[in-house]
Length: 161
Image (cartoon, rainbow, N blue to C red; front, top):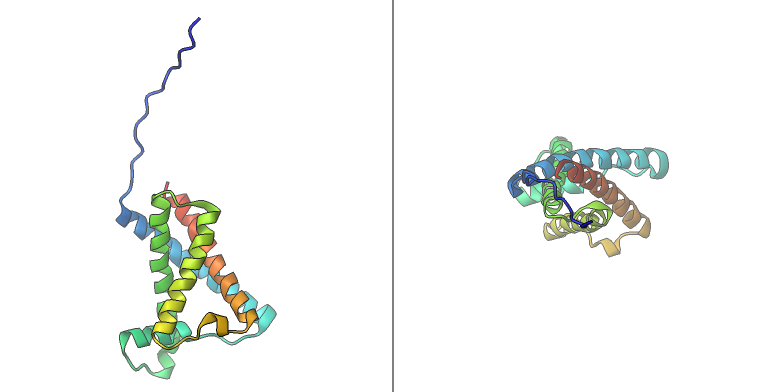
């Protein structure tokens, strides 16, 4: 008796483009920002009682070189918060497309998201270097960016096979 294997015919799976993966990732990033915002609001109201931060909004208006009215800062803050999350999510979508997936990829993506935030905030002069922050604030920031990264990564990995 021969030990001959039979191979089932296979078709290559359709592969999406990097641009499409980026767009899927952008959508995953928006969902990740929503989850991060929910975790921030929960932490603010139940644990720390800290005030809202408008650093993202001030960073955006500095990048654009505009002088906004104080009443419009919430809108600028949300634009930067969700816009930055969408673009970062696009990067995570491309990571998923090229096989950088799962919890370890999410862990790496947390660092990438923190680096994007800190680079823009410090480049514009709005933020302070994170190692100058109180330790509790560092922990809170890493925690919330981890929520963003893991939710975004989970969705991107699920959508981009």
